[in-house]
Length: 84
Image (spheres, rainbow, N blue to C red):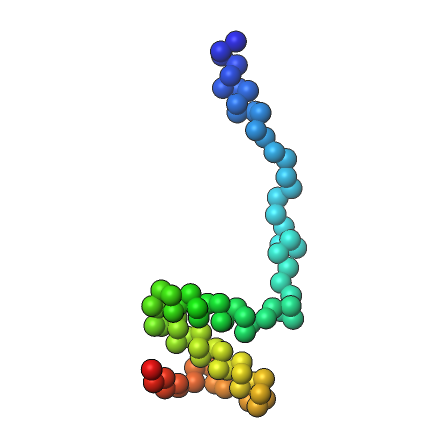
């Protein structure tokens, strides 16, 4: 009887799931609120005192605001001077 315990343990916990497909993770660009994503990441960067990440996400927030308010596309890496 004790011989069958490992077999029962190995076979008793089997789950049958269909494997993940690319269609399970479809991304809809229109449903993404990038401002909230960038603000969240900026908050994490500030908590971790990560200056490079803080600069990057602040730069992305500024680019989004420029586009929203002034309808101006800033360059990929605009020069920002931040004085704290």
